[in-house]
Image 1: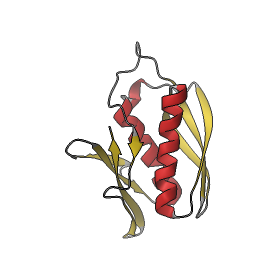
Image 2: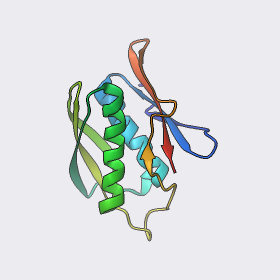
Image 3: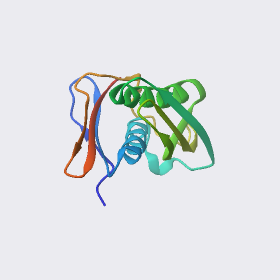
Image 4: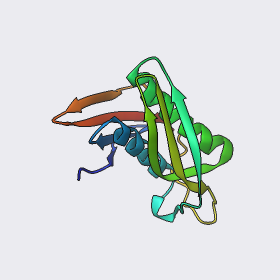
Length: 139
């Protein structure tokens, strides 16, 4: 099993390098990696789930739209995910079930305030039979 993600050292922002055996796993791991910047995932229980959908004309655009949709759900509703199951992934649409709970400052350590996934240094490629991505977040 390959690792899900790792943090990138980026001056002034935050980034992750993400791995997946296929695109659905890559998208799921990217979401989990992004949530790990916001809080310690071990403290997040899977008490409820939400459905999140993103659309775009390109794969790179879809990847960024997907992460920004997850950020929207955190910013607007306070929902933080621990596990993600991608239920649909096409060239222009990603839909997934995100398992987690509402962020509680008394329970969850506040990590970074992630504002947006960016195209800056975006890398999305198939390599040696698996997928890798690098994404930088505005914080």
